[in-house]
Length: 156
Image (tube, rainbow, N blue to C red; front, side):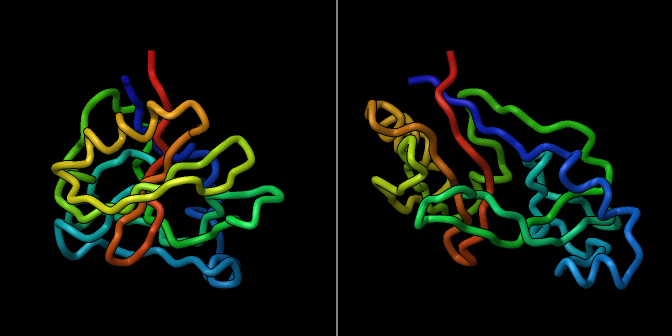
């Protein structure tokens, strides 16, 4: 079962990089200058931001709609992330270096399965979950803090 990891669309965040301080704060966001190599994972580029880069930290609704599993949580976005990443059949370092929670959703956005795995062993879990016909897509979360990391879909 081939899969694709999908980054978030950068257009959803660009206005916040130009927002005034009070407007950004009212939305629950802030701009941060990265001060360590491993700790600011960008949800658009699916890479860790480098020291000195500016990132946006802001709440993002990653499960919307009428589902009881609606969810919103913090995401980091690199200022220079220009395009949503699509990573096919590979687990990038952004994920492979972390403990992950993988949540399987059906077409009603209900969680129908979930497991936790080290990132360097999540490939098989993704393939197993996507092999079930009832599963529409997966969300990967960073298990320790629970933050949304990326969406996973079947790929041709």
